Image 1 (cartoon, rainbow, N blue to C red):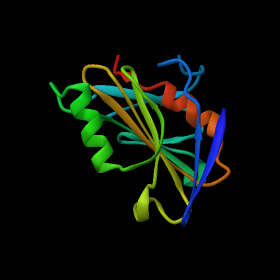
Image 2: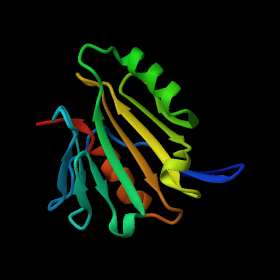
Image 3: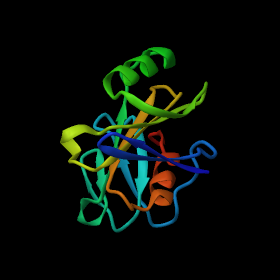
Image 4: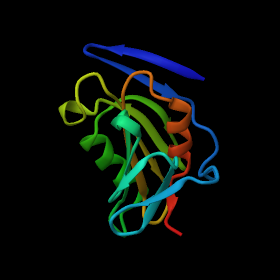
Length: 150
């Protein structure tokens, strides 16, 4: 299921969430956070730098992050919602938090954003910014690849 929400000044797009932590397609690259505690996978043609993956021409960015050790799921969710304010909650349950957000001026005008967190130890998160018309199916696959680093 897809939905589009028109918010003054931005267009927000989201997707219904599938199963947690699906395996990444063959040939994709692993992107780990700076502590090597959490990871995502991005397509082979993306550029990887530090804890982020960049689509060609930087039309989309995915950044992975591990929350501090010992932080509870509820504490992490509360902090994330305060820091990156949700526009539309896609999923909020015991396994995953997924919402659309305004990536703000840092990402550039007209970009959309998602924030995803999973209930792991540590809590793993990924933020996404993307241009209108980006391949949301690929972004969804990246979001679903979020796991504790192996």
